[in-house]
Image 1: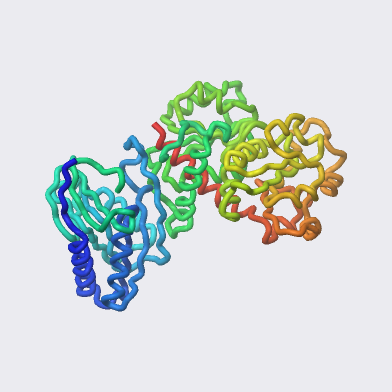
Image 2: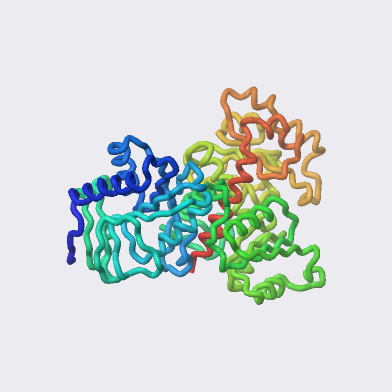
Amino acid sequence: MQKRLVLDKKQISIILDRFCYQLIENHDNFENTVLLGLQPRGIMVLDMLVERLEQISGVKVPSGYLDATFHRDDFRRRNNPLKANETKINFLIENQKVVLVDDVLFKGRSVRAAMDAMIAFGRPKKVELMVLIDRKYTRDYPIKPDYFGRQVNTLESQYVSVEWAAKGFDENAIWITEEKEVKS
Amino acid sequence: MQQLSTKHLLGIKGLTEQDIQLIFETADNFKEVINRPIKKVPSLRDITIANIFFENSTRTRLSFELAEKRLSADVINFSSSNSSVKKGETLVDTVNNILSMKVDMVVMRHSSPGAPNFLAKNINANIVNAGDGTHEHPTQALLDAFSIREKLGDVAGKKVAIIGDILHSRVALSNIFCLQKLGAEVMVCGPATLLPKYISSLGVKVEYDVKKALQWCDVANVLRIQLERQQIKYFPSLREYSLYYGVDKKLLDQLDKEIVIMHPGPINRGVELNSDVADSEHSIILNQVENGVAVRMAVLYLLAAVK
């Protein structure tokens, strides 16, 4: 199978540091900011980001996991229904600045569903989107990230495979493959 | 597995253990949803559900209706008391007429055992059995087992005593199937006249002494005496039944362990269950009601996904 490395362990680490400084620059002391990781894969990025942000800024920004399975627009249209994941948000987002965190932005449908799901926890003051990989030219919805690690040009048929050492892979890495790898 | 193995929920007997676990895992997520400030998700917004009740129901009908509305489904309600059934219309005709209005799912309660199975063979919609005579009441068994799992962490290996009117109870039969599929040990307890003759062939223990049953179990599911289904007298009086089989605080205090008390409702207070137990910390009766909505949401959501 053809496989092309997009980001290696060191590059991912540099990007996470950059994300932290961008957030510090835009959100000051994080007084009214919360971070939401999108299930299932955005929560890995979120957890690393929250930890790194605390090391750099000394602030533990409130964070939670958001699952949008029940808000997706492809329910009953998929051959294999998606399994729901845990939503863990122990705060209201009313009047908060929300940063949605995911690993890969592809068609924008997950983010649309996530914004729909998010509203159940209040009316945010502002919503931003942070992704490690932005797949350009594949969007179905008018959604673009406020923070991205790397933009890549891909075909719709290709797959972006995100590997985390914490999930049993050799080390953190992001690849473009010609077909979906089952392990990720 | 991410999909149910069946298009209909006719009984627990037709479900696999994997189906039940999938329903529970999905219900966990829906329980979180119904505790949000906004308790609604749009999953079933293109689905119309008919609640067809040929028998009285308060809790189950309300619970299903709430579950359907929380999932954004369109809901129509039908009860036989004010319908053309009184004019002699057959079951299939009644339901086919309702389906002509483009209904996708039917939730039905009927006094005849097997009525949902009959319907599933004759019409093209997802059927959910909300209780068929003395046969099955699958969503009640699912929510009971879900409540045990929530309270005790797991159902497997737990000892559950079902106490009371087993003979007329669809809850008992569905509970037995469900608990056994999940690996629990089941005992039934009641006067001999209210235990079906061949109940032990289902692999359950049989006990006639309520104190021994309570001493044995981790969970006691106390059932209602179903006077409306009893054409003859099965015991001399309610007072005598209460004396021998009623569960009260005094009885629980005599046990050398803490047990969980459940009841599917409606409770005949002072008959099968005393208020000092029903309203005590041992009781998870109101948790059962809350879990009922989450479990029914999971069932409807998962059935809608089956192609």
